[in-house]
Image 1 (cartoon, rainbow, N blue to C red):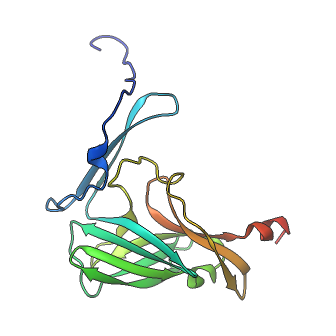
Image 2 (cartoon, one colour; image 1 turned 180 degrees about the horizontal axis):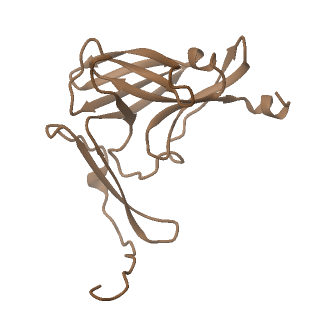
Amino acid sequence: VAGGEPRRLMPGVNDLRSLVDRAPSGSRGHVAVRIPYATKQGNLSVRSWLRAPHAETGEIEISGTAMTVRGRVYGTALADTGYVEAVRRDEKDAVRRAEITADGPEFSFTLPYGPLADRGAGPWDLWLRPVGESGPRVRLARLLDDVPDKKAIFTYPVVPCVTEEHGTLEAGPYYTLDNDLSVRVRETAAGKGAGA
């Protein structure tokens, strides 16, 4: 408003079908994402990301005490030397690797929870190293749909992990507030109640 106070826009009916299951070409070397949404106060807002390169997660399957993730990388190529690394958030030198299977830009990996749980409770952030140690480090995330905040919407089961040093913990994947993929290792509900 020229010369006046700015006014918040109110959201209307939005057709977000074009945001669902998008698959950008990746030819620009980056992925740009914009997702309009209504805030808790009813105002129109837009979440946006610009990532170069970007590793988009897709299907996550939990089996036993491991998870298998499928995804696609944009803005860089995958090499035979590529892998995924889980990095403990509060202990950056604690890193666990998982091999990837690549088919063009598509990749998959299986990450066992046991080695993560052996370090005790705490979150682990997941990174793709598309060409190995010498190349870029790409945060795994889910951005290419119409859900602005995945954390409360995309929920996954946790499974018990028995450790020698920390007893039984539970582990499972989750999306952070930035829609990045991480693994949470925590005390079991029974362990918390028992004062363990």
